[in-house]
Amino acid sequence: MELALSGKTALLIGGAGGIGGAGARALLSAGASVTIMSRDETRIATFAAELTAQAPAGARVDHIVGDSLSEEDVAAAVARASGDGGLDICMSTVGRGSTTPLLMNNARDFTAELQVNTTSAFVAIKACVPAMAKAGGGSMVFTSSVIAAQTFPYMSGYCAGKAGLEALVRTAADEFGHLGIRINCIRPGLVNSPDNPKVTASFTGARPTAFLEQTPLGRLGVPTDIAGAIRFLAGPESSWVTGTAITVDGGAHMRRAPDITRRLRDELGDATVEALLAGRVPNGRHG
Image (cartoon, rainbow, N blue to C red; front, side, top):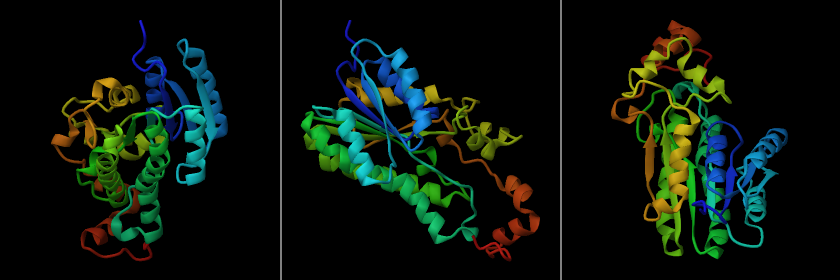
């Protein structure tokens, strides 16, 4: 029996762990040949070797070092993944956010969050479209966040970056739909990834109940929760799906983001937080 993605080529932009690693395994197990791009050469080489050992017959695994914000690096990765043919699938798990009160942020750091969350997707789309057009169509899947459509105080850069990503995805999906190119997003909730424990710890610390109280299914996500949605959007089952965002968050989008003010009090002190709540820039804390 032929696997659903046999003969397909896939490029993963953004690392080998967490959501990206689980997504790569899902695509590979469905028969796709997978090329991984990351800045960390040692990590992706090790992960590529692990994937190679798991690859089904006919599927190949490759890796290339590159920066997701470099047009030259991403173009080289697309060329590597495509080989002599075109590119069928691109999955990008690039993203970064910080919990910085807006009045303590600065334009440089705010812009950097917009770039990593939105501009990286622009670079990927621009590089992938010609290769996917050559293949007669394709699917791009970007990792957004539930807070692209949900306010989260103290995360203005991340919220804006992911909202910008989704606006870009909708526009590009419309612009290139006639070529058979589908472009979609996944909106994960908080994912507890063993590959990046600092992310989870930065939100939950010793009090994960703040998130769990806003999650109807009562648990944090794990990378394989997101990988199933990646596999769906990459494959033929979603052939009439484009320009949308699929939320995979345990139901958290139906409630609200947790209040992390108490955590900020622990980190910044009561005087700083009281100044912020009063609309004042704390003394000496201009970002």
